[in-house]
Amino acid sequence: MPEHWRQWWPTPLVGAVGGLLASLAHWPLPWMIGALVAVILFRCTTPWAIRDLPGGRKTGQWIIGIGIGLHFSPAVVEQVAAHFGLILFGALITTLSSGIAVWLLQRTGEDRATAFFSSMPGGSGEMVNLGLRNGAVTSRVAAGQSLRVVAVVLCVPATFKFFLGDGPVLSHGGSVDWLWLALLVPLGGLLALLWQRLQQPNPWLFGPLLVSAGASLLFDLQLGLPPGASQVGQLLIGSGLGCHFDRAFFRRAPSFLARTLLGTALMIGFAALCALGLGWLTQLDIRSLTLGMMPGGIAEMSLTAETLQLSVPLVTAIQVVRLLLVLFLAEPIFRRWQKHRG
Image (tube, rainbow, N blue to C red; front, side, top):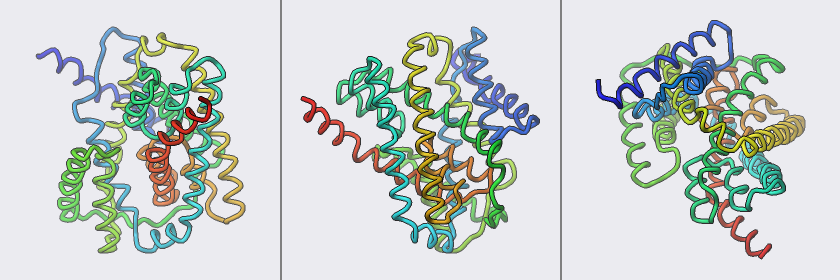
């Protein structure tokens, strides 16, 4: 067996064992969180440096992107559009909350660029590139971004389920139409390839999501993924995330990682308090608002919304707007800050 095969073929198996155990233990988002924890533990406790399945995380995002898009119906989008000002405000609060983590990292010894781009909730790849252009320590930017997403994935779904229980059951349709799926899946992949070629963020999530959401809106499809598809997507994403971590990662800069976790916890707390206030003022579902304002990944937070029967379109909309705000504003704000502080 070629050496590179030996490094990746056990990864989905380890993740599947973790997902199965988490499912039996009734964890929230079991196939993602279980796979994530199992792969991290395996990489940290054995000498076998297993790696991400080639194309595995992209495939997981492809599946989940199709599933998220199918939640968009004309009635739901009309409701989301009616609250666009609130969505923009919520996304802005999440973006601004990252200032807490920036302040904490800078006060405890990190340089300005590393503290800033490690803390912005805009995606690891994009923030590493921006950090590289602005003099940040890119290894720490990548570590901070990865750790924040994993911390949110591990803590937020469990906290929601423990303290808030399940949300109101929403009607998402859910019938399976194989002809439509046979059309949407390859079209989503083609758009993802185009999105990737144009060097746009999150191509394997946004491409399939845009295709399925567009079709769902135009034809009012009321469809869902076949049984087990979401679990496969969760497994692939969770296993891929877990492959970012090993013993060397945690030994590299334990103080930086601890401060990143503290900053993430403060961001989560600030966003949650703001979501409670917005929910009280607008009478929108506080659970969906809170989840939408969490500084995690779009796929992970949308999956959590689906698992807890919350408003997937509302959560996705807040997360997408926040990502766009960070991508377009992070570098100009940082350079203005640099110029102001001289």
